[in-house]
Each structure stands twice: as C-alpha cells, then as structure tokens.
Figure 1 (cartoon, rainbow, N blue to C red):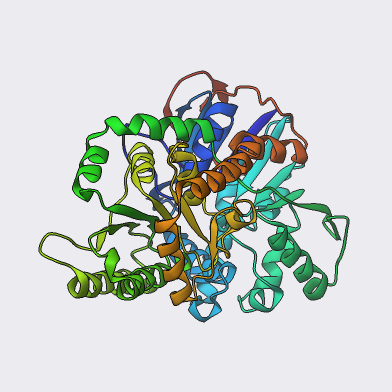
Figure 2: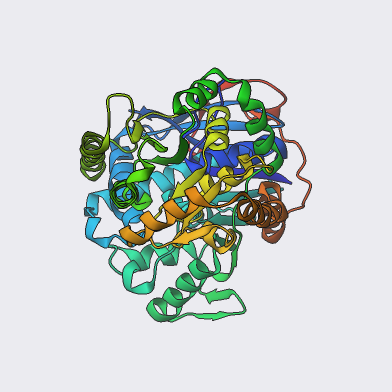
Length: 487
C-alpha cells in the first residue's frame, strides 16, 4: 500500500527551528516513521494559468514530503477567505466572526480541485489517500471526479460544531455533501462525531446507522480517533533539555519563583484574553503570590493578514502591558510575553520547569500542548495541568484541574490551587494522566485510522517522486502536467 497524506501545511524540519501548528507537529513524526508521502502547500504561489504546476519532493525519514505551489489567483480567497474567515470561526462556534464572499468560496473549491489534480501524480492502484483538516473538505469529491476509486479518508483536527452553529456558514450543505465522497471521516471526540451525524440527519435528511452514513455517494463511515503524541520521545526530549542554554537561563531568572506557562498560536479559540485576565485577578486576590510566581506566555503570531487576528495581537500586547504596569516591580514582572516560536526541544524544557501548565481553550479539537506538558514533567516532582473543559484533551486528561475559561474568578482560584498543590496529589494526578497518554499514543492514532480506512498497521516504505516514477532518496522540483495528460 502507498499512503498519501495531504494537508495544507507540511513540515520539512530544520535543526532547532520551531514547528508551528499542532497538525504539522503531529504529522511530522508519523509520516517520517511510516513511509508515507506527505503532500501540501509549498507556501509559494504560482502565477501560471496553463493548468501546469510545480512540485518539490524530498525524503523525510522513511517517507517523503511533496510541496505544491498553489495558484496565486485563488490562494487568498481560499486561505484567508473561506478557510480561515469562514470555516475556522464556524468549527470553533464563532459565527459572529464569519466574513466570506461568494468569490472566497469559489476560490476554496478551485484550490481543492487544483490539489486533486496534483494528487493524480500518486494515483497508483495500491494508493490510499488520507486528507487532513478543514482546508480540504471537498477534496475527495474532486478526486472521485478524476476517477479515483481507491480509499480516501478524512480527519478533522478541529471540533465539529452543533447543527445550529454549522448552518451559519454559507454553502454548508454543499460542503457537507461533498464530504460524503470520503470513505471514512474521523473526529477528535465522540461529541464532534455526534454533531456531524446530527447535522447529516437533520439538514440532509440522510440516515446514520451504526456510525455509517448512507447517501447517494455510497456509504461513509464515521469514527472518533483522538490524536496522541509520542510520549517517550517527548519525555526524553524534556529530560535532555536541562542542558539547553535557554532553559538554564529561564530557571535561573525565576530566582525560586514558580512558573506558570502557556504556549499557543495567537487565536481567539485559545482563550488568551481570559487567561491573562484570570492571572491578573489571581494576583489581586492573592497578593502574597507576587514575586512568588511568574507567567511565561509564548504567543506565536498567526494569520496576520486577517483583521481579527491583528486586532487580537494588539489587544493581547495592551493587556499584558496593563497587567505588568499594575503589578510589576523594578526587579519582577508578572507576565513574560514572547510573540515568537520556539523549537520542540526548547518548549519541552520550558514545560519541565513550569509548576503549572495553563490551557484555556474556548473550543479546541484536542490541544496537544496539554499532552506535551504532562509528558515533559519530572515524575518525582511533576507540575499541574490546568485544562479547559472545552478542549478535546479534557476527555482523556480528566485528572487535570478542569476549568471553565469563561469563569474568570474560578480560573484564577484554580491556578492558585495548582500552585499550592502538595506533591502527593501532584504525583497522583500526573500518574493517572501519563497512563492515559501512554495508552493511546501517536502511532496508535495513525495506525488505527489507516487500518480503519482499509490499510495495514505496518506501512511499507515509499520513495520520492522524480519525473513519472518513484525512486529512492532524491529531491527534485518536478513539473506536473494537468491530470488529463498523465494517462
């Protein structure tokens, strides 16, 4: 079997450079160890209008990564428009932030069709396609139109909202009907699956029996596959991180104070304003904690071309300044706010130093930061995870201190509780969470989905693309012809 994994963003790791985005960080080790071909955007745009396009391919572990130049004429409407100003707010239950046009939707469908033509390069008799996330909801329909009959699966990394929210998106019925061209649709939680099934029944009038949708396209299976992490690898990374200079500097700078850490992309779904406000409220209610605690908030800028995100970045910077100005001293500031990314190795070390990991998502598919924080802890003296009940991770990590991030006073009290938690309770909670993480890791998630789609648990190695054939260990930039000329 040749497994073709598709996402908007792919990851070609470079030494000690940050990996941003939960999807890219999750797929990187899975693809590298499975022998799959990972296809996605090169983040370069093509001005060509002749139907031809370019693809870079290079080896990635035992697999390969292929990067496609997407069409400049449609990329902005696809990415900034329909995907991130329409679908993203919809799946995170923020229909008030939906800002899309008919042209945005047309561009979204055009880019899905474009990617479908690019994937025909890999359409061999033993091919299995696994498509990821909201950027490519209609990709299976485009592949079917091009004659692909092999298994095509889809995994949604975000939540799927209630029917009442989903209907707020323009073209919602057309998109969900297109999704029914997949053979298997995977969700992070049973709740997301239930929301999708409810939508299909009530909006499309289709039956869902034993997790299978029966539609004019055929049968589509629905299942939940909560994504995991490579626990031992991340724990090992955290253990070794004590030797890193930036981790040593962080520890020394605390001067014995306890650290609360948050690591996020700047996004309204992460509850960053609520988090900072709660930390402010805690310092007001518990003045003895001043100088005894410091918060490190890593906030990686995201989607800066979209007005909603630019405003959020300004609001966060302003709020941090207000809090630090109100509580800070000449030799201590309550919040260290860093608007940049860090390598996974550095983050693992920061997590290990922190007494409290703070995840305050207002709506989140899973949130792998929560799992990474737990895996990074020293079992002899672990920190405490404070976790939003609205993150998918809360379904598994129920030994965390679960919070409602809309309850600012309650969140403030819970952070104070975490800081004061005795070591016996910290160990007990950490042990319970580690058992959950170790019981369902990244490779289990990957294998379970592929097996459910019709593949095998052991995925054979595939080589990289050059010209019309697969050859081992070569990196080339290949001109790909329109699908009609590939046969």
